[in-house]
Amino acid sequence: MAGDYPAGRGRVKIEAAGLEIEGVSIAGHESFYKVPAFRCLLEFGRAPDDVLGYSTICLTHGHLDHAAGLAHHASRRRLTALPPAQVFAPEEAVPDLEAWLAISQRLENVSYGLHVTPAVPGESVLLRRDLEIKFLPGRHSIPTVGYLFSEIRRKLAHGLEGRSGEEIAALRAGGAEVTRREEIPLLAYPGDCGAAIFEAAPEIFQARVLLLECSFLAPDDRARAREYEHIHLDDIAERASLFENEAIVLTHFSLRYRPDEILEALDRLPEEISDRVIPFLPRPAARRWPVPPPV
Ligand SMILES: [Zn+2]
Ligand SMILES: [Zn+2]
Image (cartoon, rainbow, N blue to C red; front, side, top):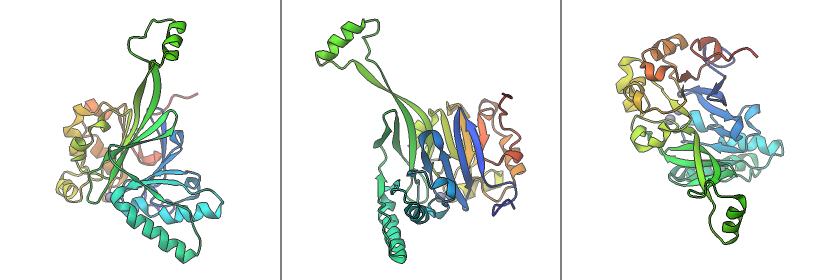
């Protein structure tokens, strides 16, 4: 055991295609990921000290290994005089999440001031001038949404390349649209999902980093993966040619497997994908991690 985690599992910090992701992900146990570059937390299976400062939380679904920190996070932020966080969650789950918050507030005789924002697939929210979250459809045993983070850039409108600054300024003054919006998909996270996600949210194949669950690995566990609507490693291997991502971070491994069994199973992935796969496991076990050159 490391802390209260099983051997070889627990806190993980990785860098995937330049993006730092830190957290814990163990199927049925606990999941949360800090993404400092976006100042966002994905899931809050619990609310340890270092996630309290995160004021934007993207919850994919109501399974408690992802959501148990909801009231705890809100309560602890109130105690530390932090303003209520912005919590996104599937629309269908919002009434129950709000009811849970209401009961917690009644128990504590306080107000958290927190309201959960419904994340509706197809809609998007601008987090900063240059960062947008688009909500993706989910595919899991209960209502689930995914999240796609994109960098937003303003580029010169098509047809204006080569024009002088004065010409463009004159066009703008005349009311013409001289810029166009460019979206660069940086991180896709569909949450817990079955293989149906690949057809439901094909955008995930194009994000620079894909954070993808892979709960099941053993050949015998394929039926189990289907029954609980989770990804099996074979679902990924069969679609190897579709992944355009620079990094594919595999997470949410079941506790049925030891870390060495997980790494051994990942060796079965086809070569065209294997060198882009990063297992979300604590460092001592992750022998396949790309090692950054010494500075
Ligand atoms: Zn889960
Ligand atoms: Zn789940």
